[in-house]
Image 1: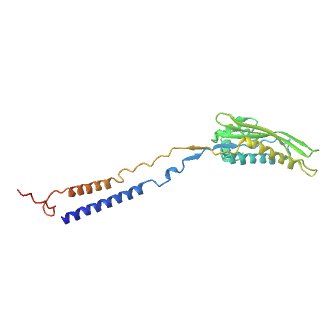
Image 2: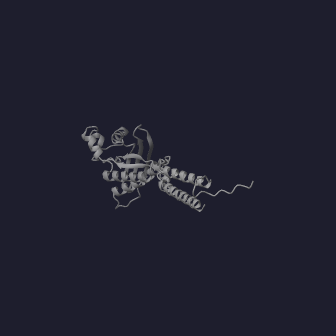
Image 3: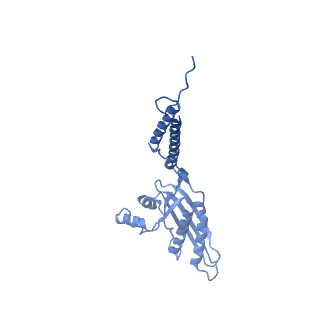
Length: 263
């Protein structure tokens, strides 16, 4: 009787140990908490090739400096909008230099002006794998020497490379501050350019929420056979306990049967 109880107790202990082992294994094999919540989406930024703004050298004495200011202002705002991954075009840019060497683009394709014909920029952008382009130019330039003031009309637009569609097109004018007799034309036109670009880029690349695409999270695949042997062991132990608890038999250390009733 006592030996049978010891045997049953041992089986129960083994069953408890097996259950503990199973729980431990399942915890170890499970995906870490929060793993499915990470990287649910990614920012959708369009690639954009920004071409230098066209400035007529006959109009502004510092046309290169003025073009650089306009282009840099556009780049900063386009990046800040979080909608575009921006690259500023330049003639010696390796992808363009290769195209030029391979005669896929002509000399005229890689030098200013760029804003006069949209096809010129979209051709290059398509060859280097960009989705959009941004073009700009100074369309009108006036220096009033008596008033010590410069007026600029600047235009800028964003174009879809694949279709040639103009997404946005903004044109506006801006005046520099009224200078003094000591103010130079260069100082004044740079001031007018800053004011013009500040107004243009608010419309062309407004700051807003970042576009995000949500992708369904895939549940980790269940590892086959990771706990099958444990379940098999527990089944055997449970069967043993059931047989022992139900009596049955055998000689030796079996459970004593009560004496038959008197006749």
